[in-house]
Length: 334
Image (cartoon, rainbow, N blue to C red; front, side, top):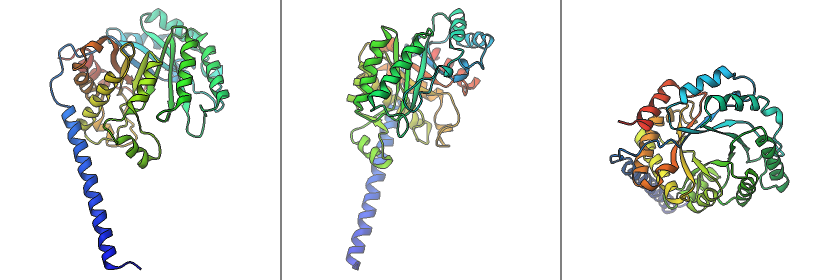
């Protein structure tokens, strides 16, 4: 039976714990506020190395040559250098069925005629927590077989998006290494989770969520060393205010630029969609805030200007306002 002294001690401990957590939240918010201050350099903007995720309708027959020409009008004169067109997903055993991309050859032909200078990668992935098991060597082999088959259609590269990949996953590193060898110089890129912004946050987030929200710098570096491009998914941050999100983007971009090898292009995922997991993110997260955060980070890394860009997610959800923000605040900022 609890005594009054024990009960009072328990209450005090709870109050102290709450006070510490509130203080940590305050410190984190202040740090992000500081990240989102200053004036970006005039040159800190698109250098023509941006990317765009495209939905599955482009290669399953729903989009036509006319649609490709219309998109080309939208993209000409922007900084878009790469597009990732959804061509999967893999089956549970790692198989990639050809019926996932029946119109790929036509799409690639139309694309080459309309936008020959913009590379097209096959966007491939799957859910890997309880579905596709990348720890299984046989599954990884089937993934590679699927990559080999789809590359025969004429893609310029492969863009992986497996979620969630835990920090330190050596089997994922093995897949990247073997995919790179398979591509023979064609582009290998991957989306990545966010990077641990400050020491201690990765184990804390893992304890709360039961999975890795963040990658360590060391693991991010290992992934970047095996790829040509890394696209950090900065969106769905859960942060309720735009200045918090802006600081978050600036911090993520800064760490990525400091960590990735000089030859690897760093892309900042920008949210050109409006159905976020948390409802308050619809007002907090935007293309304009992502662009501003990216410009602040790039200002301190002039040597990386030609290996840095925004990656817009995703074409079928992007509005005219999203495209206007991309143009005004990233491609041609005032």
